[in-house]
Image 1 (cartoon, rainbow, N blue to C red):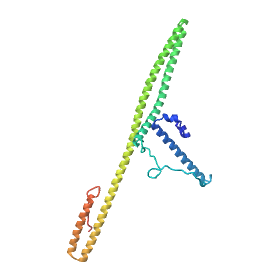
Image 2 (spheres, one colour):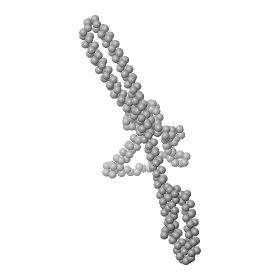
Image 3 (spheres, helix red, strand yellow):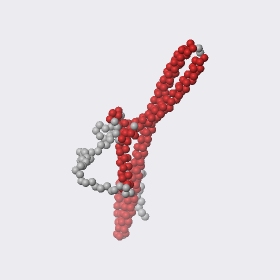
Image 4 (cartoon, rainbow, N blue to C red):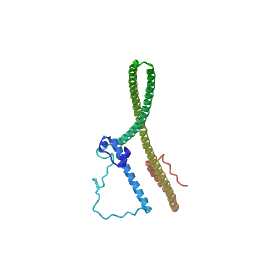
Length: 286
């Protein structure tokens, strides 16, 4: 029936009214997928046909007074409805939970129907064979009895048939109950399997983001250490040249004092920067 609905892109209103909200969401989602598939297929075919010269290039239509007026929101942009964010909509998590539960229930229902068909066939065959054997036995006995006993044999046959019918009905009820319990158990198993897969996917994405953030911070710390080391080497060369030009011990003493202050400032700055470990001491080139 779903294939027929997707083929016609139409569903009877009475049938639609019997569906639950989750089933309606699933049906509308499938119909939208079918629309997109048909549109992409048509666009691909027209593109191939135009490339191979099977169809003429589309020409612009003459100007027309017909136009489309899109509904605009309060911000002046085209109004868009996002599932789960509209007024009165269920949260996305609730819709996701319902879809997972519905998928699990439908799959378990299909499996239960298949199991019940097999079970019903086994029960029917079992009692049909037993009844056939019993009828054969009764017929064999009936041939041995006298004419006056035929009525009693008929009554016996009917009573036996009723007894077998009662037992068959009891067996069917037990089989239906067993299948129902298996269906419920299977639905729970499928639900938890799908739920665990969803949680695992979310955890993997979170771990990947944390790893990328740690890598970025580590790279930033390495770059900052390289810049500080380069500044220290440049500062050392600059003060060395200045001391040589002055040719005084006082110049060298002032240089080392300035280098010590600069080293303390950089150490305090590095202390506040994020990094994987304690700050490394600045090494002056020799």
